[in-house]
Length: 512
Image (cartoon, helix red, strand yellow):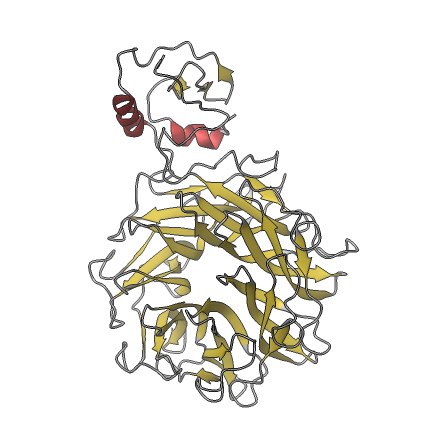
C-alpha cells in the first residue's frame, strides 16, 4: 500500500483515482491509499507496451519514491532500523555515519555505538540486499570493537570503505588516554570479525599530526588502487586552529612514511587568517591525486566551501586553485555559513561538492558546487559555479546535505535531512541535472523526504547515500528509537519492465 506521501508524488492527474495499470493484476489506489479493484480501463488491448510505458512516464513520476520491497520496518515500508548494537541496553546512541555497497548487493553500515551508556565504540552492521539484517555478519548482523587507544571512551567511526577482497576499512578517531583525539582506523574481515593482521590486532591510531595537537579527527577515508588507505580530516595547529590534515596507511595499517612528513601532513590556512579549516570529505582522482573538501573561515568569520589537492606524496599540488587550495564566494544571498560535507570526482575529473548554505541567515538549504580540474569554479554549473535548493519540506529551515553520489548519466544525487515544523527531522534527497539545476523528474519537483522511520521519531538523519547498479538509492543514517542505525531505499530510475513488485505485476499483453 502506498503512503499518502507516495500517492501525492505518483499522481499528476486531476483525477480522483490513481491507477498503476500494466496488467490485469495491477494495483489501483485512491488518495487515501485504499486498494481498489483494477476495473478502470486506461489502455485498450491494442495499446503497445512502449506506448503504455511512454504514457505512464509522462504522467507518473516514480524516481525518488521509497522502494517498498526494501527493509523489515512496518512503520515505514521501504526502510529498516536495527536493534541496539552494544549490549546491556544502556546504549541510547547508535549512529550510522557511512554506508558502502558490496558487489553482491549487501549493504555495509559503519558508525558507532554507545557501550553501557558510557563509551563510544566503532560499530558496523550489514544488511542483505532486501534490507533485512545479514545474520552471518558479526553477532547476528552487527558488531562493535573494543577500545582502540588506551583508556579511550570516545572511538568514533566516520567513514568506511570496501576492499576488493571484501574486507571493510573503518576510519575515524579515538580519544587517547581520555585527553587527546587521534586519527584511528580498523579493518574487519568479510564476516565482521576484526582483521588481526591490521594494525595492533585489528585497529590502530596515529601520533599527533600537528605538533602538540590534542584534537586530530579523521572524517573520511579512501582506498588507493594499491590498497593503501588515505585518511582525511583536521588537526589543531598550535593546539588551537583546525587545519586540513591527511595521512596514509600501508595495507597492514602501519603509517606510510613516504607520505607527507613521516606518514601525515597538514595545510596552512586556506582563507587568509582563518582560524577554522575543517576537511570533511576526500576523494581520489584517477591519477592518484587527493582532493579534500570542507570549509574555511573567510574574514575569520564566515564558513565557505573550501577544497585542496595533494600530490600522491602528500605535498600540496600548487597547480590547484591558489597554490594548492581554494574557497568559494557565498552560495546563497546573505549567507554566513556555507559548509561542504561531501565531494565526488566526475569521470572528467571535475569536482562536485555538496553541503549546505544558510539562506539569508535564517534557513539552511541543500547546496552544491562544481570545480574544474584546476580548482576554479565551473561557471556552467548552477549560478557561476554553485547552487542551492528551495526548502524540501514546506517551511523547513533545516535542510542539510551530508552526502552526494553520481549516477552513470552524470546526474548528482544529494542525501541528508529536512525539518518538518510539526514532526522533526526526516531523511531527504534531491537530484540535480548535470548543469546543476534541480531535476524536476525526481520526487516532488526535484526533491523528496520520508515519513518517520521509527514510529514517532523526530530525529531521522541521513548521513550517507550510495547508488546501486540498478540505480536505486540507498540512504543510511539514524532514527530515534533511543537512536538506532537506519536505512531506506528509493526507486531511481524506474522502468515499468523492471519494476515488478508486490504491488505491480507484469502481465502477458492484456493491459486493462
